[in-house]
Length: 225
Image (cartoon, rainbow, N blue to C red):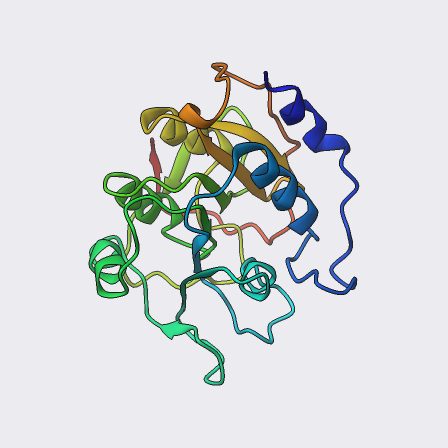
């Protein structure tokens, strides 16, 4: 049974200032709880954009300190870390995974590139099957809208609300590749888990409140997906 999924909203989140907590919203206790229930295989992760090992907002540093291995990439990494400097596009993501020997099935994927996230994630899921995915979505978009930015391989975020994809488009992408959305946090991160790992239901009722946390920039190109 999936009673544990219903517990996710009520789990107390540690703050990022606590020892061993590095993610923006203190999500490590949630991730530990999820892996306790779905298990791990190879304890391999992929994280991009990953920031630096000394970065105050890292979704992978906690796991790496627990002995996990994996691939961490960023366009502007800290040169003193293991993070690979790569500018990620839809065209090169699979070849980058091959270059760095990412297994076809691995435990944790974190994606936050403030731009072509939808298109890159779609390309990954055409080939790879991570067990658990944390993906940033664009919470400035209303829950009823299903859209992503028009693909642009040279896109760079302008500190505004033109980036990424809507929650509804993320749900559709999950469904297309046999994942369920089990949780969202702060209208920012959505959690995908492979359906074969849970007592799957078509919809766990996850929703969010639109939040205009970035400046609005009109007249940008979006694609309905």
